[in-house]
Image 1: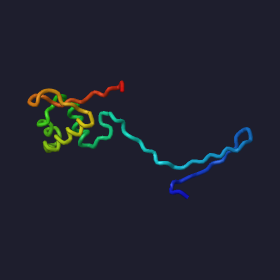
Image 2: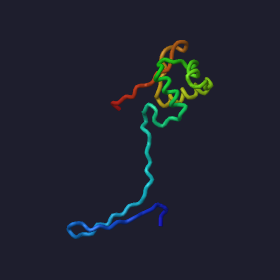
Image 3: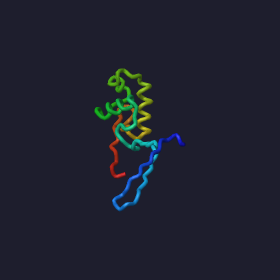
Length: 108
């Protein structure tokens, strides 16, 4: 017998016919939607995304102050991950620009 559990059930219908039902346990795999504010993100990425959402336009050099003094290099790597996932974007110049949460496009 297969490693998956299986079972059968037999029932008699009102018209006198027998109905045999059988099923097998199957692994159900769910996936996170491609776009979501924080679906599927680690705790560190979620907290960074929440800070950027709360303070739009924040620069990378200022973010560690809001993130329990997380190293700037770590914050920069996490920013890149959020940009790659298209959850945030950078607007403005290198000197005065900052990061903003991308609004999900519900028309997709």
